[in-house]
Image 1 (cartoon, one colour):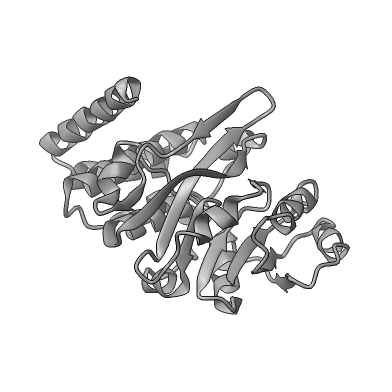
Image 2 (tube, rainbow, N blue to C red):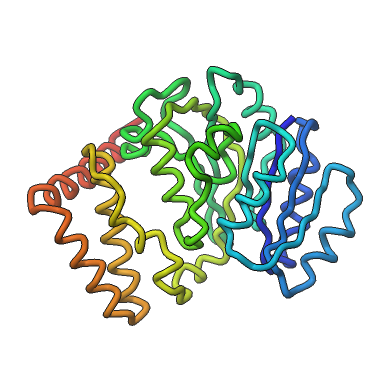
Length: 286
């Protein structure tokens, strides 16, 4: 059995579609834990209107998406955890594809996904498969693309990594992946598992306090290898540009100052070269 965890906050317009994509899976041995993180719309009524004994609806006070995911993981009955966002769609054979490869020797399994909006649909299929011993390097090359919705892992590993940082509700998944790929090997399958709906992309420019962003908590992250340095530097750059876009110049320049104090000119040049290389690699890779 696996435990599927959906954090829910004011997604009345799409939560039923997401739940149905879980209930119609070819793999049937699961529990579906829906953690309502203080919704103020009629999300609760929609969830409770669906009659299936595998659904466990839990309401909690609003604490952010990371808090909701961690709470769901603590309530999970299975040793295997699968996180799905409330507006994404699980493909029919997703769970079968992932669980057919899970074992004590492969405690983290990831596949591909599709990005879809009203105008386009792009498939993100891993370029490699099997056990990956240097996942951070392969993430840099965009050969693998783990994320919520295509990632199955054990509860033991999830909590060994500290779960999701509950201070963070923007780019929180990036922070978790960086920890995971810096610590563990990962098993990759080439099957698509879910559809990431991008119709609400405008939310990415919604103003959020710096205290809720991953970029605010990078000062203590180690720069022990070239790949971690690359990803952390990219996040500093992203956060700086985002805060400027939001008109938050004070925090933008604080982030830039912190970045400049941690990264030498040589390290920045190395990150620039790595970005150019990975872009070129992806253009010529078959």
